[in-house]
Image 1 (spheres, rainbow, N blue to C red):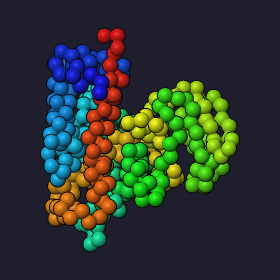
Image 2: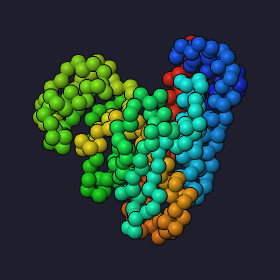
Image 3: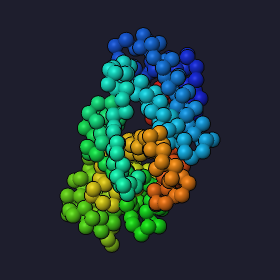
Length: 315
């Protein structure tokens, strides 16, 4: 993990850091805003890290709540580096998503869904951290969110299904797609390339040979907001195999929605949550268990990288 979390633990380093951030976004009153916000930045980061640290130690039944609040605090720290007046309104203090209030008789987490609201933290962070506005769906099922997490793909493979395909590596400017993906997307090769071009750097060369479409870029991929996702362990680049999962959303947005819904179950659906943890009746249990292990490691690293990108390396 980078050293930025450790660096931002004093008032002086936090103020200097924010001053550098605000210069980059052409904030008019850089010095005043950096002094005004450095304490908030310190506490967002401190609380976020502590929620994760405690989450590592507690029993499974409380982890979703702690990880969700850890995530939201780190997100607010990231937002403060780009939005000096955050929160501009009290409407931003809501989560920005809702879940079903009544659970159906044969409820499963995999088939559950969350709905995106017009206002609140989720649409706000989507717009200001990831330049995604509007969010490309009104509601989405949990199984579809799991399907976009590279580290979850082994679980789907054990079930005999494939949700994503490896198309490259972080260290290489070359991407390779199996031509069979055109059948899944129901489009021609040219139409497929036109679909992915907005998410790539300049394409230097492209060819189709032996059932593989090879795309060579001018530069390797640096950003991994969907539809390209990076595995946290081996740095391989994953791409959704099905057209319904071709969504320009970030890892953080995916984990936010899953953690929100899990935290709501943990807090307000005691009978279902207790039954899941004690009797483990559905495949929900291993998927949730694996996801919580992944998100505890991946999200703090992603958000620390976000903060590091803002660092003025010359200072």
